[in-house]
Length: 73
Image 1 (tube, rainbow, N blue to C red):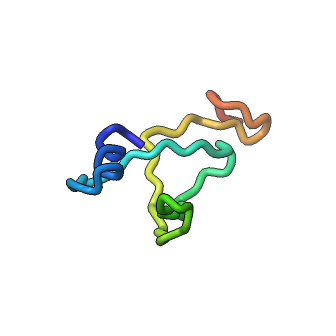
Image 2 (image 1 turned 90 degrees about the horizontal axis):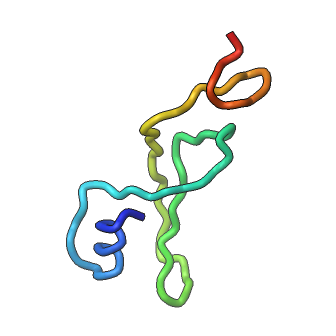
Image 3 (image 1 turned 180 degrees about the vertical axis):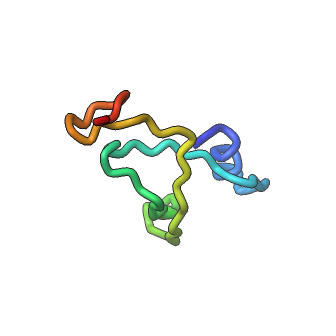
């Protein structure tokens, strides 16, 4: 999470318009949405939410060799 999102989460106060969360995943399996789980201090799931994924930038990927930076054409 970015610093503002972390602060709001830890303090339980304030409000943000959006959160930035870094998620690592297989680049070949891009997703349109992910499921987030809210976990309390006892590691119990307190809720879940489906969140739309937006990409700031996506590199070209070759459909033949699956290498980033060029396409098959």
